[in-house]
Image 1 (spheres, rainbow, N blue to C red):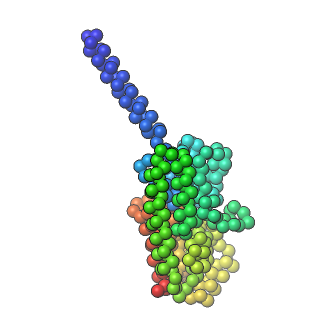
Image 2 (image 1 turned 45 degrees about the horizontal axis):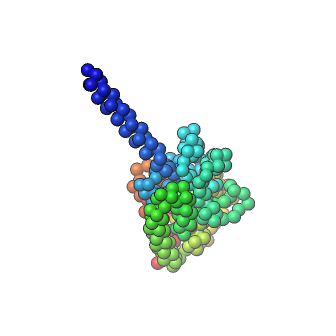
Image 3 (image 1 turned 30 degrees about the vertical axis):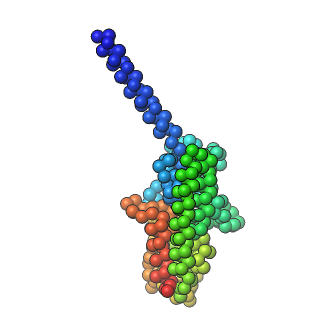
Length: 292
């Protein structure tokens, strides 16, 4: 009986040690918290299987209106690296300012965000310019390697592969938008200034940086006049917000209603990544602007 009891206790001790070691291994895995889909995509491509990437963004939800849950606030505090875009989500900015995590990577600063009178007027959608995604990738891999030096070589190799693909994407946009009959584009909200600056397009938003903002009657009339004068063919809306205003303007002007994605969030059930969505945007712009 004593022999059986001894064996049983030994077995339980072995199981306990195994569970404890397993938990320790999981807890030692670096964690990256990202604030938007584009940053989540960069992080996933760079870290591979060496770190866990968790996004604060909700699929199909407007990221500007993100309201953090207590568990998300805690996840920011405990993360190895926080990868965010200052100016896009005020609640995230406040938490980072209060907690001051050691490795907090502001992608908009890395990308060289455009100057404006106030933070609220600065466009944070840098990821629509692939060359700025390169800068964000390079900045992220630098901080990730400092936070987890054991896997620095792997991170560097993965980042190099991503940078190569981003440079190729930039080449596709430059070639695809080089010769177009039209250079003016009407969109639902002010998210495309970086894309426009890179490829020589002038974007005219219905709303401001927030897609839910109501345009004034005067602004709508200015857009109607612009569409008529420039012979603009298409009014663009985004997949998760701003369709009603764009649809009304398209109906008023007899133009086509089409999608141009700011890639702030991925819709639930959509099996496309950053590169897929950017190429879809390129094709939509080429069609609307009659590019050769």
